[in-house]
Image (cartoon, rainbow, N blue to C red; front, top):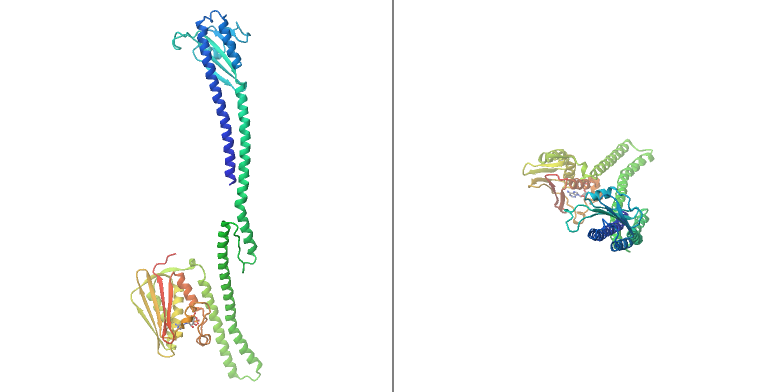
Length: 463
Ligand SMILES: Nc1ncnc2c1ncn2[C@@H]1O[C@H](COP(=O)(O)OP(=O)(O)O)[C@@H](O)[C@H]1O
Ligand SMILES: [Mg+2]
């Protein structure tokens, strides 16, 4: 902006200078042309009236007087020997004037030059026979003319002074406009900056409003939307921290109660000790699994740049997961069935995808019928995606809970889930892992009949 104004000022100065300069050159060359013309006529008269031979002629003298008084100059007439035969100042008659200009002119080269410092024009004209053309005639003499340019300079100075005055006005105007527009443009932004700064300390429940200008209104809106998002993230983080603390405290409280009971009973039997110690050990296991799940979840929360993508055979990956879960399934009397429709390879992070699928299949085993339950895992693909579907014959999920099961620490039935075991973090981890693979997960379920989890993941990982 400042640069723009500076450019405007500089260019006005340049324009003003060049106008004055071009006026000067024009006026000088015009003056030269006029004087040259008049002197040419006079030269012809000199020859016609035989002035070169006998320089006494009232008519010619009159012409000389008129010319010199109009242009404020001096005229010499030099014959071809270089002798001055006429000087309108009557000072140099009879002397020889063989300056370079005169010599040049005698040889046929007329000159004219402008002496800016001393403010005069000097020119030489050939005196030739008017009956002949310039080229045919020999040089009979030289007329040396000098005319003053004082009044040209005077009007140039007047022009310059006016130009400078206009220039000053223009510069002042430019500065004024610059100042006004700068304040107008900067002011709204200053105002919104102030509002934003005022809110930075305690953004919790505030929003800004600067609707004096359209620009600031738009910025304020965008900023407020950002505030809402920040607040949502902040709230959910707070909730998460309080949930984590609560979940971690529960096993500790149980252990404390068990330990205190033993300590306060001096007659506690060995049986009781063994019993309580077993419970304490279980609580430690629980604490451990919560911490492990939390660590997995934190790892999933990292950026997708942390994914370790490799081309993997998905059939083998699923077979391995099922093999690892088989002991748990046998203990729960649940049958695991795998339907692979075709060999599939895809670009996945093996560890994270294994964790995701293990969680779902483990749930399907855990929340199954007490006897004779089954879990069916099917794998299929088209040209873009592969699909894993896990269907169980289990207890099902109530309709109103389906939207919540992916939330951290959410469990449909706290007391029920507690005896089955689990942290409520499994599906949250699963969902993060699948989303990181640019995939999707869907659930459908009917209470008492079973649930189906459908997963879709691209075969090629796109960053
Ligand atoms: N296949 C399933 N059948 C019935 N309920 C399920 C199934 N999978 C998940 N759930 C419900 O969703 C809740 C959340 O699952 P998850 O996040 O894995 O936590 P948990 O550690 O309790 O298994 C479970 O507590 C359970 O109530
Ligand atoms: Mg689970």
